[in-house]
Length: 233
Image (cartoon, rainbow, N blue to C red; front, top):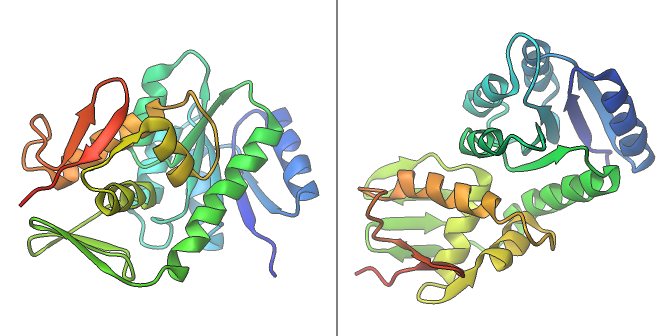
């Protein structure tokens, strides 16, 4: 089995060295960059399996780099785990809305970072193994084999995590799913407390599937618990 490639993007050399040392000891090959421009070039040329992306970078910052990585055909589906300053809640939200799959705040545990990388890879690799089936809810059609979602005749551009969230909600329509359950099922690890990740992805998903995301028809918020896919006819 080939070693997975991880691209680490951070302008703090000691952080890059720390991550690289631990990832290589965990069986990964590591690519590194200290700025957004070079990171984008490396991502397109090498197509790593995961990208660890710091948001505060010189020149092209992590937000712009994330946006460009997501918009390129060769890199659009690569899982991105972003690194943020602990106090910058708005950075986390914006990063997730731009397409990052997960985030860690500095300072972080390297062991936890390795666990997050393995989790996101595990989720990504499980997709082709799923038996193909079609889930239809009103005018939304979810093709789990093609990993494609359509609203009417229009194909929706969903990230990996948005697709997985929609799929699990659709498979359990009518049931209330807690934020912690969704976090564990979709992100692949039992990490209670970071439910903001789920909320941001749900908000972004609503913008894509709802006619008016301020008055959602499909995904209902159950206050204090989580979310439910409505039985839309």
